[in-house]
Image 1 (cartoon, rainbow, N blue to C red):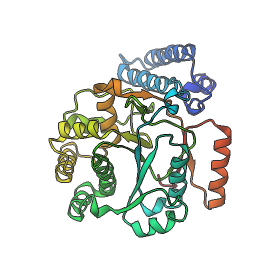
Image 2 (image 1 turned 120 degrees about the vertical axis):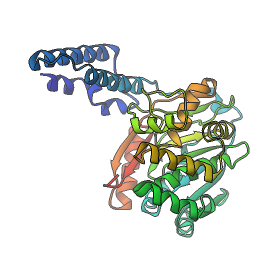
Image 3 (image 1 turned 180 degrees about the vertical axis):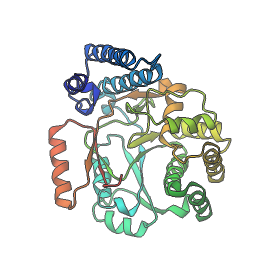
Image 4 (image 1 turned 135 degrees about the horizontal axis):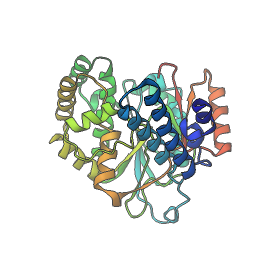
Length: 347
């Protein structure tokens, strides 16, 4: 019975409510809450267990996480879209395995970001290849900088991260590159977009009052939170995760986040803190980029952001460019999602 009801009540699985035109009702949340209580009450009676309170609490929290995320109303076209908007930079940290989607990601941002874009930075272990791929497609009036990974995080630090973090060393390097590139700008905000993600709808990412778009999803990784606690972050929201497929960084806020968390924003200090926490905690799963910044912004700078519904759809990556083009055309025509991520089979 419970499985049948779970199918009939989409809040249980959620993918329907990721759409911009769908959202859960309070009655559905209340009914699901009662069903969870009933399920565990019957389980305790059947198995003669004294309590399964921890499992029940986890189920309630997961339900609450989904409800909060899917209940965020999509933003309407802001009045500030017609005002003098702050300019921003765009940043991609791209591995060659994502080069088939990268041009769509870059062109999608140029199409849908309503703030003036002063420059694009593409950081990669293969910058020449990235330039050959992107240069013919990007308007000549747009400034694009192709940067090698080693010019942001030295080869020595990268090797240390790979040695200490095993399979997550390259992931750690990417995170450091994102925040280091973002704080390298004196005043302009930087919008980081994952190379496998394409924006589908027009957005103002920073308005005239210096308030930024902020997204969160209804699933959290407790391991990320363990790292935040290891770094001394005091206020962590365990109902929201800010690890989405993009993040707008305001440089002054980000510098403050890094300085207060790590005592310094140098590559050595950041890498050292990550490695020390990995050794202390015994696992390499962390988010020193999106989760750290999102939590501190959420708790410490409530006047500096406005929320939009995190409406991203995940797709298996098509095997040929024509299929990818067709998928994007269809998604934009439907208008149901803010972005789409095209994942490789092992991701």
